Length: 226
Ligand code: B16
Ligand code: MG
Image (cartoon, rainbow, N blue to C red; front, side):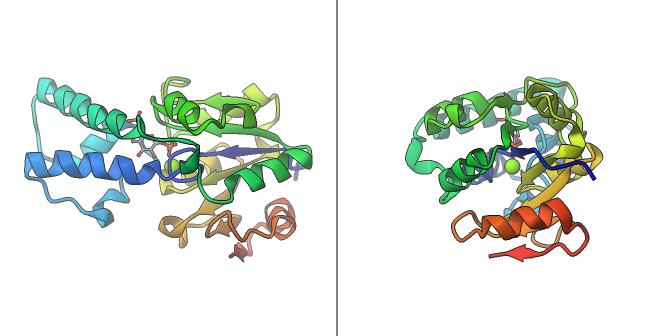
C-alpha cells in the first residue's frame, strides 16, 4: 500500500454544516411542490450534484424541462441566500485543529466538493489558505459518486490516488472515493454504518495518531474514533 501523503476533505457536512442548509432549501422546494420530504429522504440527496438531487426529490414524478430548470434555480437562490450569512464561526468544531495538525505532519491537503457554491462557502468561512488545492462542482463533468472529482483533486496535489484519504459525510462521496482507489473516512452519524477504513463522529475529540494509524494500516477493521 502506498504511503499516505494527502488528505482530501469534503466541504458540505465535513468542514461546515452546510449540509443542513442544503436540506432546508430542498425542504422548502418540497413544501412548495407538495412532495413528501424529510431528513430520512434527504439522506439520498446528500453529496450528489444539484440536478441529481432534484431527480431524487421528485422520485419518479415527471415535470417539464423548463419547470425542472426553474426549481433548480429556486433551490439555488434559497441556498445562496442562506450561505451569505456564513462566517468563520461556522467552521466545523475542531476542524482547524485537525487541519493544522495534519499540515504540521507534512500532509498535502485539499477540498473536493460537488458544490458549485463551494468557493463562496470557503471564502465566507475564511479557510482557503488552509488548503493546497480546491476542487469544486465546476471542476469536472461527472461529480460524486463518480471518482473524477477526487482524482482531479489528487492531480492538483500532485499525489497518486492510492496515497490519498478522503473524509466524507455522504454515501455518494464514500463511493466516489472507493472508486478512486483512495482510503475512506466516514464522517458523522449519517454514514456511521457505511463501509469505510475509519469512522469519525466529530473533529472535537479526535485522537489524531490513532486515526491516522487506522487509515494508514488498519483497513478492514474500520475502527471508530470518538
Ligand atoms: P450546489 P459536498 C454537495 O457538496 C452537497 O453535499 C450536496 O447536497 C449538493 O447537492 C451538492 O454539493 C451540489 O451543491 O447545489 O451548491 O452546486 O458535500 O460535495 O461538499
Ligand atoms: Mg458532504
